[in-house]
Length: 325
Ligand code: AHM
Ligand code: MG
Image (cartoon, rainbow, N blue to C red; front, side, top):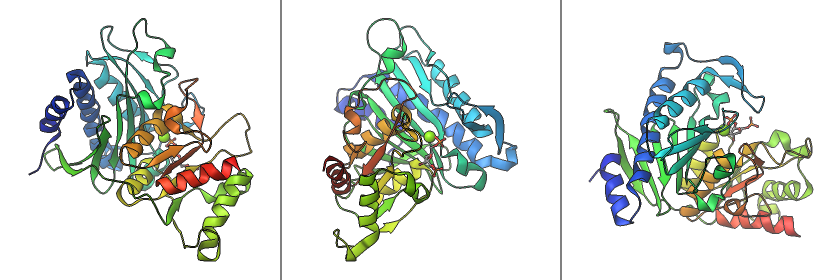
């Protein structure tokens, strides 16, 4: 029997004694993503490909669709009384929403947007936190990944899929023709072992020694210490890579490199690494920054960057071991 999101959420909240407001926050995020999906599907037909001509707080060029997706999420979340505030990869600071709200939402509205103009999968990543008591400040958002109330993503790929966890397993829904998300998978498990890795090899010469060694071992295949041949994939859309890993295993990396010693990586802890790590951990995978479990990192700022190694447990633990040696 197919279950739609609107049937699933009340049942799931009830089974696990979760707050109704949490379900309503998730539904608001998903409704905004259905609208983003409509825009992504239109592309050139709606004249919304290409650069917006603006930069975000991190000095990155924004695409028109980055700006549109960001606006759709902010507008939707502000109307939900359960949302106290939000933070977006595309906004300088957090945005206060509703005074009595119990939840905070952090998101990357359109991850992988360098791919949008060439019709390759992109996604929206979201993280939901309980709002701490007291006035809303940046500190209210700086919670460890392990304390997330939920997180997930919508992948705008050949199919549009919603993947999320409220910390009771992972659920996969597929958008049908009528615009409803229908559950197509429950509790996918990331295989513990893999023969597939994902990393941007063009940065290889900049990596630190342990990462150089790890990738050299994978490339050596069955002639090296790992004793098996590995395959490589790089979509340059993190959501698409993490979805592939959720479905069939693998390890995804965006390591720190030597070019900018104060920048610990390219990807963002709060908008990308934490929610995707929560999904993978809930599915039996693992995630870290090479020295620490991702979900145990105490965030220091909203737009903090982090080195990322996530996916099949055996590889993530192997990388951590190499970094200790
Ligand atoms: P974005 O949030 O600006 O889209 O950047 C994040 C993306 C990830 O989806 C992807 O893994 C990575 O950047 C790709 O980087 P590169 O261009 O170095 O391959
Ligand atoms: Mg991103």
